[in-house]
Image (cartoon, rainbow, N blue to C red):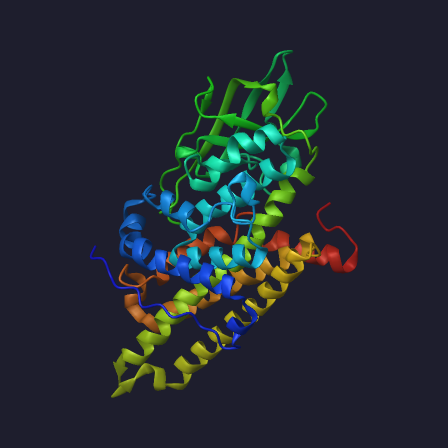
Length: 394
């Protein structure tokens, strides 16, 4: 498949760039330039081949996409939450699988080690994770426990001088090539704890998941633990219970809320340009009422999501963002992006299903994003519980 030029221009209907600092714009524009140079020319082929291009890892480290909000003393960039959001937006504009790789590394591996780990764990792992020299994954979802992680079966027993870990996790991004896994498992008392498992431990395997129609340029696999001996110093000491993994997911969902906007922007930009160029009945289809309706609704929904996420980023910087607020933004952005992708596909007509345009790839990717880290319906119920005070989960 021939490489193509990336002429993307991001929509900014409400002049939101005025709300960004010069540093925010520099971070975003650096990430955008990297995506245009390194990702766009090969992403369609990578998707067709169902391969994650490993050469992206070094570049992701160089643009600060791994743990951007982790303090500089541990190798992070020490940036704010809006910077993190903008980075995820630019990466997902390239591809959801690319953003997943960075999002997992930042929010599901580096965040828990920084937040819940010991000083020794921070110094050992975070600097290498920040550069991409070391890659990580996050083990929470199990074959029979997705939306209800508290029912997990993965467990570890205290054997005196080490822990013995048994169980399995699935749908794990980065698993096939990860150097470490932050795994959530039950201890002897039945409490959920985080534990760091390194590749090479006997009994630890990471079989790859094949046959995906979605996130094809992302590496997905399982984590299998068969009497794995884990050193006691690998236990995350500063958290117990579901609040540990859920705290990580709050950070990751925030990144997804911004990221999905990037996918929507790419679909909109492609549809707008195509509609101006495609001639039917003697004029560009952009001149027809129904095409304008689609484009007008797209830019409206993108703008609303941009405003929602920028406000959420401000609240997160002030440590005032609630899990329910993050939940709303994740659900809204992904649902919006799916609708934009579907309408953009119609504007492209038959060309919309080909790899010559990014639409169908984004649409298939978003079918995963709408499910992972809390399904659309689960996030609706989180909002419902927040506003009514009544729990519909039980």
